[in-house]
Image 1 (cartoon, helix red, strand yellow):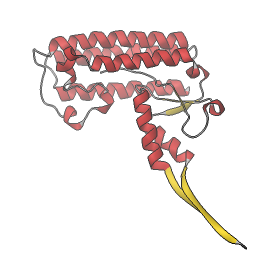
Image 2 (cartoon, one colour; image 1 turned 30 degrees about the vertical axis):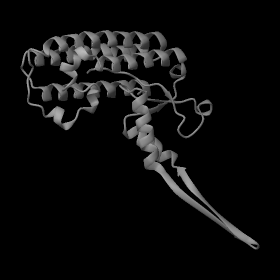
Image 3 (cartoon, rainbow, N blue to C red; image 1 turned 60 degrees about the horizontal axis):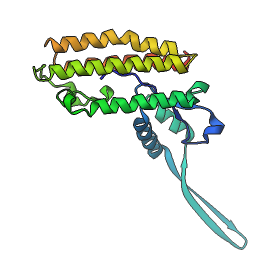
Image 4 (tube, one colour; image 1 turned 180 degrees about the horizontal axis):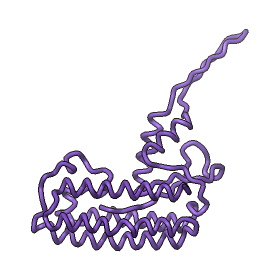
Length: 226
């Protein structure tokens, strides 16, 4: 599924939001993925510590866990997240609009009438499994109607997302929206090749994943201001 969503979440893992005024952002990500990445990175970078004191009249010892902030940030960045100084990202209306779109994406993936498609195509294309990428099957008549409906759902969601970026992000919104609109014809071409039986499911999933990564890379370049 070709979607490019930017997650807007406060970077509260290591310090207070009011103090930091930064957000972790990642194209294509929702709150669930942010929470998973945050949990995994905290598990990796938390380190035990111990301290002991011995004085004239006795001693004491203490211990616990501490988080290495530098390693935490490196872990999040390795998973595709970027810590951005961006005041617009703290807009409640912008964050709420992005959240609503994320929820609608998940709802589309759960629709019973689209099972013929999502039974073999990942909802989050970046998370395609090795089995899905190696699938040698080709399109069947039964799944064609579902694929056409999925395409319509994706087009509507991407149009909404582009509009949200332009409405709430004065600095970067037009560039983010243009990135979405530029990649849409490429995704449509891959989908049409699969519908016509010219590529396998695995090839379809791989090319969708590659397009998503390419779009994500461009979106991160935009939000970083590079």
